[in-house]
Image (tube, rainbow, N blue to C red; front, side, top):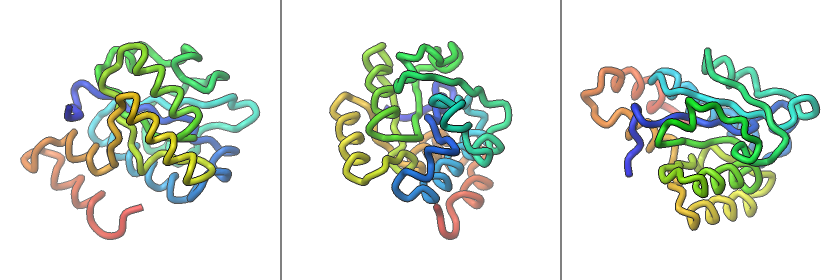
Length: 184
């Protein structure tokens, strides 16, 4: 199953001020998540940010919010966005949900498992844009989501599948902007 622009939305889970410093390769995660959010915004992909207990853990990093003007921000107390019942209908109506954020083995995992249980067949987890406090938990979370039927993908897979062709009107700009030089 390929990701399709007309059928997909992006869910960015809990990339928050007080949580980010705790994850492995925090700077890398932020740079890679911003890359993905920018690409999604340039393609007009609907984006939702979740925040786990923002009163205590802070809000989504401004660098990510700035990259997605008009994105929806929801807050939650449950680890799973599904259990928290905070996801907007506009995201859930889409057949495909692309997921990034943190932590891979907690909030990302529980959200993805519950999206699958709720009947979402096409859940795509962007492996290079999710993180945990340890590599081991990151890998275990990815393996468990894969075993549950989620599609494990990379940021470049997202970009190329949403564009579908080098003939796409945005291909030249996006490839020159996001695929040249050193990537995060």
